Length: 120
Image (cartoon, rainbow, N blue to C red; front, top):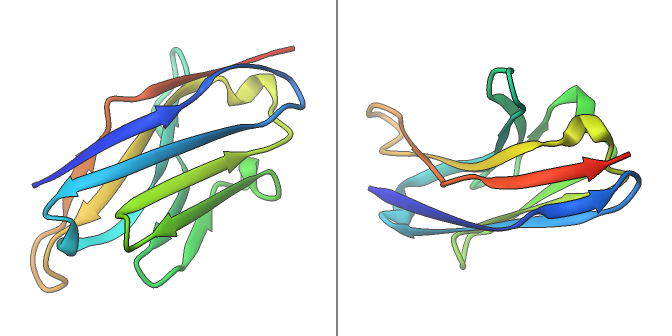
């Protein structure tokens, strides 16, 4: 089992910046990918950015060039630096970890979510 605890988030004006952090505990040796998803009111949860243990990153088109995901394998942590924020970035942001043996079933863990509100 992997447990995730998020920090950061809050209220910011459009054009501003925020940084989200997520720390993992438990069976962290089995984590393959960590990242961030978000869910806006009335919408489905969507991928924001992920980073693999090897450092490969993946971003949603809507955040490319504005958001940067970074990982620290030693600390079992992942951060999301969000710049040039827009009102449409307003959502609850969830940390996610994919873990398990590479040859076994994939398992997923979610953080409790942190609210990001961008005022225009």
